[in-house]
Amino acid sequence: MGGFPPGGPPPPKKPGALPWVIGGVGALLVLALVVAGGVVITLSADRPGASAGSTPSTAATPSAEPGTTGGGAYQAGTVDLCARVDLAPVADLGVTKTSARPYTRTGDFSSVSECGFSLRSSRDGDYVSVSVRVSATTYAEAKDAAQRWQSFKDYTAKSSTNEPHHDVIGVGSKAYYKRSRNFYYLYGYDGNLYLEVNFSIFGYDKPLTGADLTARATRFANATMVLVRK
Image (cartoon, rainbow, N blue to C red; front, side, top):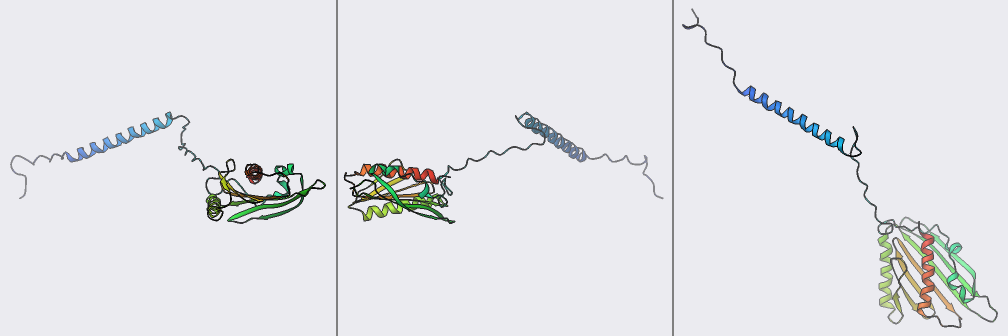
């Protein structure tokens, strides 16, 4: 018959230490998470302006300066320069406006506002003829205005070796002029704006220097920039 050996049944087996180790590690992990959570909550509550359930705000990134990247700060195509350009820069020549020829165009790539003025002497016995053309072209990308201006300047430097052409200070980002006998041309750009001011003067009895013509063209250019600014 089966039975226990002499001395009675064997003592029960002692449980191993492994369950206690695993349980202790787990308890420590839970405690660590609770403490960490308390630190995070405390730091969030101590931050000025923070409230329960709020999320950190994202600082706004400053936008590019208008006119230095695509888009620019000018818009032509909707401005009637014939109606708004002041002809005061040539008023001292004793001429009055006889006609004005407007031109406007709008497009996705570029837009244009332009006017060509004709002026004649208003004094008996004198015949002075003045033509003024003001043209503003704005581009969707500012780099296109700068590239157009640079291409004109490079062409002028190569083709107008015998004609005065100099930089002009005080018109947009950059500007230059060239003079050919009785004709004067100013080219400039600023941001997404490309600008031209051309005029001719015939019959005036006093010589007009390059500095005088530049001063007149500069007044026309800066006034036009104001008119097409957004």
